[in-house]
Length: 77
Ligand SMILES: [Zn+2]
Image (cartoon, rainbow, N blue to C red; front, side, top):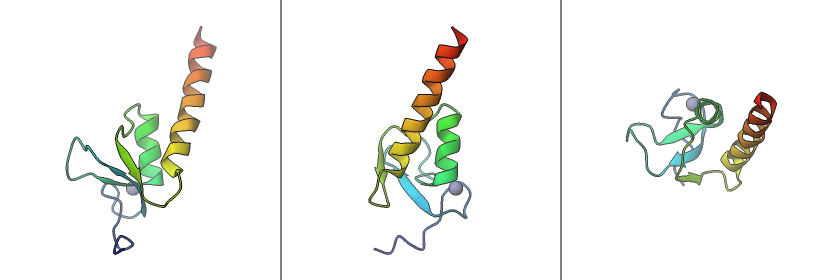
């Protein structure tokens, strides 16, 4: 595949698990799990993406975040 030598575009260290298919900045397309999670927590998740590991790692991060968001909006009412 040749993708294994690629590093996360943001931190330059992590192994990318997701690719942003419509990046705001073309320099940041590949994200490792830690940086992808940070984006979600920041409230700026990748909207159009492709999982790179053949399993829904990013999808699970989104699920976790959505559960948190539900919790927080519920808790703040
Ligand atoms: Zn990273």
